[in-house]
Length: 308
Image (cartoon, rainbow, N blue to C red):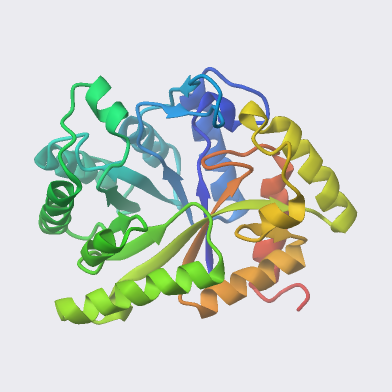
């Protein structure tokens, strides 16, 4: 089992709000490399709306995905880098292939590209981009996967998403990611659809790698975990977690002491997941820097050098 980090790169993503998100994100990429994470992943959006239902829109603009990936590639030595995920409607596919090739050169072969069909119509249209019907977007996604695999040899191409028709396209890629958050039953159901799609496409399901994004909360013991949960509730943008219990929230997430989290990761590994991408508190966030330190304890346990 490998751990990835959904890199913080939005103003809300850090323990305290940070307007200069690119430089801070690079710092966290180097921290993740030092901590032993296998990979850092960067989302690709013009903005996200962090308001909860019923509140006015609250847009937060991140550091731009591919510019940031290039900077991280040039600032690190071992850790892999990747997009999670690039909507295929944001860039001409040939341009995306050139960008990926350049970043992969800077990274000395450490790049993964995850692409998706795109889901946020307003984000596309507000930036002058077409947003065709779902069927057409899926055709474009399949074409883009094929183009990237031809034009950028050696760079794994992933498809990210959950919907059944998108999983058909995932069967043609090097890997499939689903995020954010999932119960084991939900994951197994979608994984079965990927396997069926592979058989229809004449591919070995084992040829498609699996990764899973899970919001993560680690505590040194149960009391510490409860304290960190209350801290997370106070931190959450828009008070999104104010009326949720830790027990309920944990059901589809990676939550517990280092030993408990390691055991959960082992179970995900038994289900075929090769990399769990951790996001501490919310997607693409690190709400508490000590979470990275506790993740080192998890990695130590997984390596077999500490405890059961």
